[in-house]
Length: 216
Image (cartoon, rainbow, N blue to C red; front, top):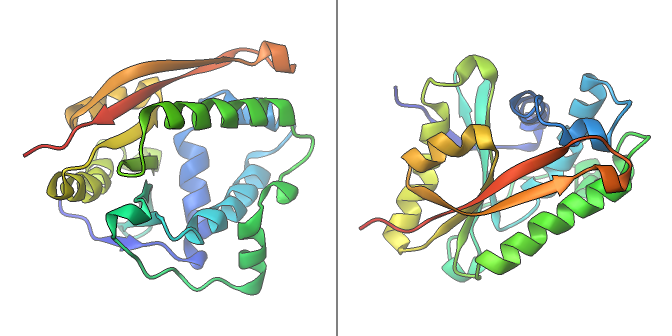
């Protein structure tokens, strides 16, 4: 099935947040960072976080609509590659949130886990990327649409550009997502593991750093 891919707007933020929370609802990270937060409150916060990405000139926030927004992706394309975009117009309130969403986060919040996890990902990106690499920052689909080609459509949007430009693509994948990324040409290069216990949490998370080389 062929899906129409469009740039997301401020009005799409609640739908993007819904996809984000439902796609990763089985991961421990959000529950550890926001231990007493309801799903609806967390979704409201994720909608605010979306403003930060929409306001980033290097971040291409794309959606697939099939009666509703079924999936979305965040593609980071460095300015060095010369692929510009027209940023969505944000309201005054959204523009304010885009500068720093963290003050809007629900409380209580385990800021130690949040900071440690953010640092873990940032360090991995520094090790494995240059300003010539694209980054798949996030890919999510509603559970009802998984396995129906939505994710593949969003992946093809970026991989076709990377192949044309002869550029690599970096991502941090959950173990559940590894198979679809392998199918589209990514290979694992490092395993990232975080133990929540030293920061007052329970359990941990594992992510796979994966890189896709361009295909001729």
